[in-house]
Length: 476
Image (cartoon, rainbow, N blue to C red; front, side):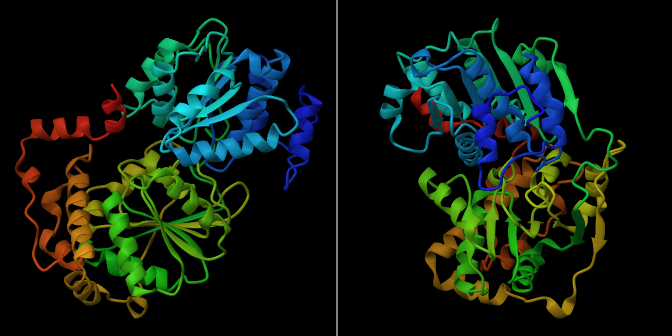
């Protein structure tokens, strides 16, 4: 970092960190000089490669060179698709900018202090926010003037630019200046899609993909494998994995919030002998943050999570990532698997596929036809280590009304997620054993699902409202 044309104030912050930052990673070496020169950037690098500092150092230097102070108001905005990632960026910024005098704000919603934020946001130099909360302030906070904004950063840009956030982003950009604004886009699965660039009004951006020519899309230290598990045996497979990895730190991904809630309640009742936690979007923000930091400081634990935890979050010392439900595409597979093997550490990833998903070509979808492949090795489950929990689940569900309700919701939400998958060739409800799946969750009978009778048109309508921000809609 000392080779860069950056201020002593920033260098002091980097070198006085608990783990001092002295040597740049590939993405930092590629991006920071261009960003310091004022160029717009599209940065792409594998997960865990140090992208956060690659944009925070230019943010600090840009405002330092322009002599910003709290009276000058917002000078930079960093947008993150999830609250947890925004909190993480905020922490890194506090470390790197420790000796700067800038005012920094975290706008992530979920808390009841919107009016308190309104009093301070106008004098905040660096704003780290989720799109929904930033838009809320832009539309409702009277003294929030962004006319002097110098830099806009999108972390996990492919997610912020997708259909779930794009409408919000377009409205946000209407409030931001274009002439003096420098824009940085970063992600593990960046694309130089022309439509994305048009949305962002980028000026001759530099595309810096430091791992584009690598043989694999994932870190070399990441050991990746998959097993084929019938849907009705998946819960047994997850429990067996947990029981055989009690001295490890693992993240287990499910497709929906309801599945995470059910699995957490069930496993807490089954007492596997290791702390079990759950992270999903239905939790209030304070609880989500508390669980995230609790998991970070534990040497051995299991975290059940939805894709809310798949994006950008830096989980230290994770040994295993298990994808109990298949992701919808290659990009999400890479993001999930990237929660382990961070920076220069090693890690293992396990994907669980149902027989139809393997037969219909999910492995080919993930491995792709391009040079940068995802090396997946097929494993088989050791029957001697398999623990059957179906009968115990059935007795718990029958005796516990709350668990019974969660089991039904888990069943419905998973089937709905498969029904709404964009790739119908790989994911098809018709290939599933619905009765067997319901029984594996401990349900005495198979719930009736009305949406399965919907036409293709109804399905597309359901898909279009799947990612609507309902809380934001209520504010309109």
